[in-house]
Length: 180
Length: 84
Image (cartoon, rainbow over all chains, first blue to last red; front, side, top):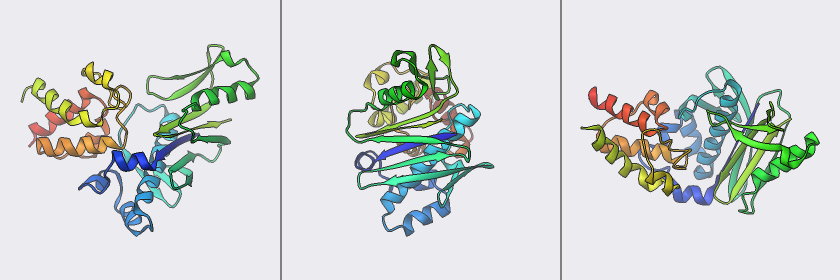
């Protein structure tokens, strides 16, 4: 199972003031807040931990077909792991000066992922190309849809598949992850 | 406070974070903040903090969990106002 999340650091600094009173406390545990203040770059750590929680939320939501919930506080980051209730997700993050990207996954995952930095936001069509190629079907046979919980899924020839995908976009950046 | 007054205050709070103005024009109880208004998920924290300030209430984790739609937010606010 997989989930991903990308944060455009420039846009995040315009959209959110994480130093606002009460902001960190609503999202992060005390030990996560310590980790933020102890970090060399607190701003980067805020968005890294946020992307870890978001990516794990998506993987967890998909795994159990959960209806949407706003509960970042339930996702607890320790090192590169995210624990929610009794479930653990591993994460891998890529950080540049411009964005932070995290993929959360379970042990059995065999995923590939791609980040787009060209503002073209072609990530969805690129994912469709990729699926058509791997599954050896016509491009027009592949469609991406969302279920009633907002979880994206892949249809091939109008049939629902069990291919796990995750999509994320923020500002100039976008990404897909697919579990094959 | 009537539901209409509450909705009007909630609209004022969320407006700065809305990225889909068409969705905002057509706002109803069923409106979803993320799907319909394209509010950035990190900004939902700001919505919750603004709601706390405006109504002088505290939204706990259980309340926060639900605050993804107009309808659920109004219910959470009414609930907190009633037990104030």
